Length: 111
Image 1 (cartoon, helix red, strand yellow):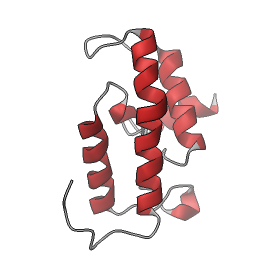
Image 2 (image 1 turned 120 degrees about the horizontal axis):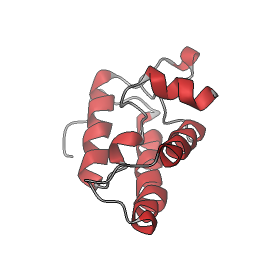
Image 3 (image 1 turned 180 degrees about the horizontal axis):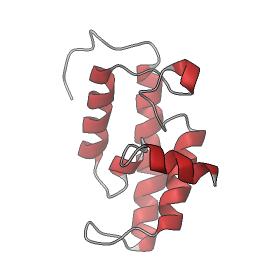
Image 4 (image 1 turned 90 degrees about the vertical axis):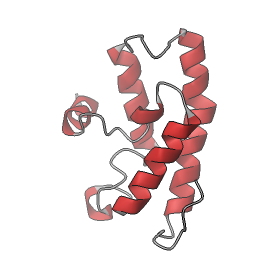
């Protein structure tokens, strides 16, 4: 994306690189190993592993303020990151930030 970086925090570039590397280096190979495509249902245990790894990388809940365990991304940063992850492709792209159905996922991490 070539949008101006005027509203980018100092932590955004590192978080962006971590998220894209996670997708490229771990999730896209996982997708290939499992033979998953866009029409396939992703096994719950696989998603749980993805969300736990996202949490360990500091990506889960990235828009939450730092005092609540997030990275404190602004709305602009969050949208930019989601767009870049979607552009990178793969069925796990939208799961990197753990934002599909939000709180229920966080609850599953704690079980």
